[in-house]
Image (tube, rainbow, N blue to C red):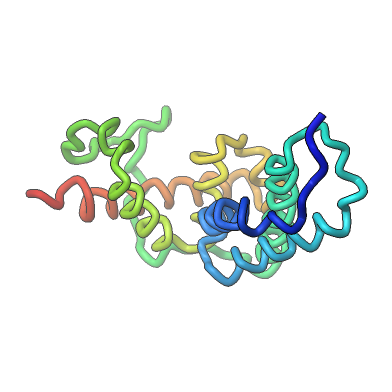
Length: 185
């Protein structure tokens, strides 16, 4: 059984991690800050319901995930059409999800994943996506959620979810090739 929660230490212990997680999904600082604040408020209100079956950190992240989902649902009610601002060719991927035209030489991608500078560039590229496109990508690729669950959470159709994922992959590829993989050439 976990020790009792310590609300006085939450901000210092978990504030930054909760904020980074919310920012990665929501893409906007103000929204991320609001979600973290709502998380702490909800946790204080529900403090008596903390059973200790999980760690304090896991409990807070669980609350945060629900707050993020609520915010995404609310936002998706008002956004009917999502565009990335650029039109890309429709034949960039094969039916199995592979590229028709492979990306430029990315060298050793595993090595890039270990580089903190790569993640800073990746985060900037992710911020360049529209919020709806970014959310689908983060939930699918980074949180490994099923597309079915993502579409239910966001209140979008499976076709729209697939289109958003497609746009995210194209835009991220283009941005990463330009800002990371081809920077030395």
